[in-house]
Length: 220
Image 1 (cartoon, rainbow, N blue to C red):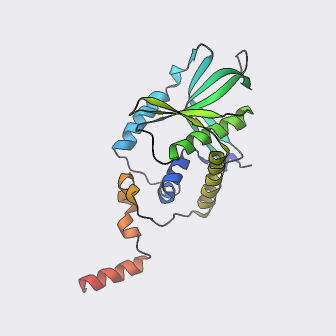
Image 2 (tube, rainbow, N blue to C red; image 1 turned 90 degrees about the vertical axis):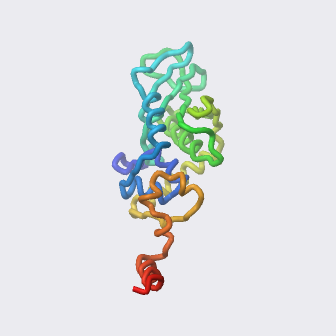
Image 3 (cartoon, one colour; image 1 turned 60 degrees about the horizontal axis):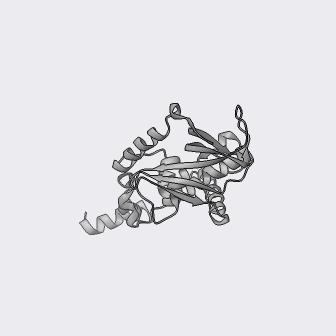
């Protein structure tokens, strides 16, 4: 069990799975830079996070900007939307009759990705909700703004184990204050931190080697 002062940001799992160096630059070195993708994503999340838009639709209660946490994984964050579906296999909610199953819904600006980084973030939210409500959550949804479509995600053992493993690794990096060296790939071009990361320079093994190479090439 982790103490609250040890909690990491839940949303960081997406950065970490995308690029461990990117995560370290943001969450350890506190560096950040906006680009069009991040701004559009913030606008979409601001709409989803409006707490005044909480509502009840038949047997479904819709809660926005819901804080969640897990002492087991040592993380905290906020779900864009949690739908509480009336079910005989759920949890009791204060002030409500019956039993409800929490179902996380994450909002993303683009379209479904070829990797699983969005799924990992959603699964992390589900694991937090499971711990908070002492229930099992089998699925959730990701809403993509570009396609205007919901993607249902089932939480199998493989994705659950990967979430737990990634958070363990994140805690290890954070305690050490460790920022991994760059690993250049095509995804660097889409990264909002590429100018801060400077992947072309960081691929050099050391500053000394970079300086020696510069001197040998310029003859100075």
